[in-house]
Length: 340
Ligand SMILES: [Mn+2]
Image (cartoon, rainbow, N blue to C red; front, side):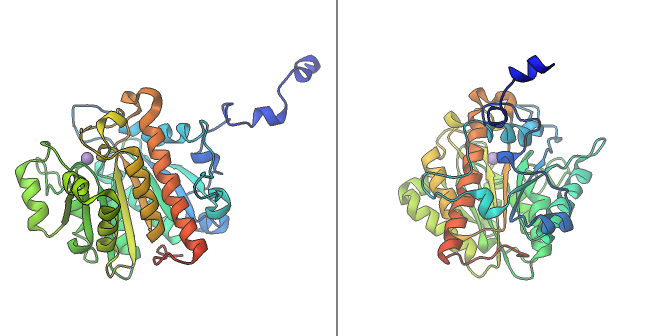
């Protein structure tokens, strides 16, 4: 035994980022019990948790239930918590913790959504920003409801997606992965004038869904409008709208907002989407103006060659947090996360 120990790895080698850690958390953050009290006691400013919801009978490209762990794994591969551009250690700044996954063995969609609502509420009550990794794109339904219930004032909603997601129901089910925008405005303090559907395009959106987006008063920014406007102006316009008279901001990022060439690991890939440079600019812009809640939806590692979609999601979260940290350091962020 002594011989094995003498030839074994040094503690430094054992904890390097290339070796497999004994358990995987987002950016190697400490685990934390999912309760407001534990989160407050840990002094966490941002909380990663998984919402592995994927139960709606869509027959193509399953696997979003594996998204939270795929993102955790990729966050440990050649990835630190400090970017070249901002040079802010996110662990130091945000005290990130990982609260594990919210899943209900034997559960159904309604019970999964209630569990997500409860988890998000605990995190907001604990004074932290939820970072929720899906799961299919029904997860903003309980997420927005939790933020809206937690916030006295108005809530803005930024929906980054190839799809409007304004379907009122499918086959009688109202809380589907194509309904999060529609359900967001069911909350009395979410006004469609503070909701932006950013990057919509293509032929997968049926005419009813497209009409509903305009009829209900959403701000629709199609991908081609964004291209004509230029990405910087488009980002500013979207952020002006979601921050206009609001006290909190919910941001949902569907992987299919990206060009399909960059996101093989998503449920409904679409061509003509955002580039990774545009996405990173958007993340920094979102961060600079502040946010209360982030979610990432539709990551399916089953189709994710080279884990590139998961990596992109890690970038999204890291650059949102970095931009916000920078802005708070400079005193230029307007929005204070709900509950902080
Ligand atoms: Mn979508």
